[in-house]
Image 1 (spheres, rainbow, N blue to C red):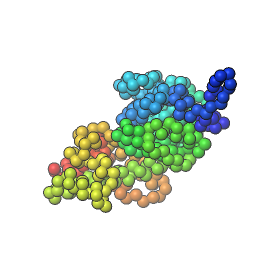
Image 2: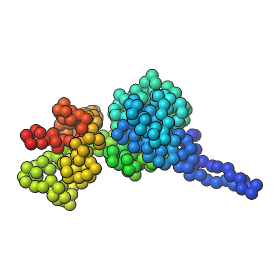
Image 3: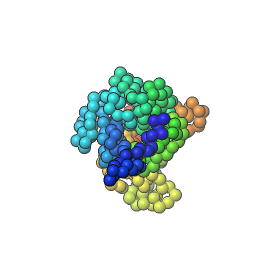
Length: 329
């Protein structure tokens, strides 16, 4: 029943000794209720800041104190553990690197489920194995809480501008309650189906993103070696049939675009390690479903090699630099 009342609230107002019933928007009421946020990395920190900008008190924690301090300076309350967050908030968002991190944050000794309150809405925006999302949903249900997966697409830039795309999986009755928060951090919130389907959509998206980035990097490298100016080549691609997100929004060649990782020695953005992890998830699910993904498998191999060659902490668009080094440039 709790979900039926999240979507609307009533405020009783007195005016000239008459009692009037007024409808208050969910957003204005929700702004008075704290939201927990766990995981303040490159994506989580700007997401939490956007909640603050929309009037939501944020109670946060992260394993790295510096990340906590930065958010604290913008008005968030910082606590010591995920369990402490669960004790103080009945809506919690998690943004973590991998499946093991999610399992630890939810079910570990100081995890959310140690102190979660009945009726709490748990939204996980990490990119993890869909099976782990389903496991967390079952564990949360045993505690009387509701778990939804809501992985994101768009990168650090979109996170800062609240233009992320959220792919949501979970019980449909709770979708509007989740959307209420997610629209503060993203431009698109899409319901995908039962728990785990959000992760399925994200894994498919990232496999295509990796393939597209490698293709863009190969194309740009070939054009440069053929004597084309990289900015000119990018301009031609972006008004032609080869245009894609990796070419027109996140170009991997230094000097072609400003405000992207390739313009900053591939710092920030979406790390090569994380891309390799996501491609590993895609590979596992493809194997389990007997789905042929030859280009996805090759992309996985390339990013794994990059991780062993010193690119682990660079943005995944550094595949361009990796190819240049491979050909001796």
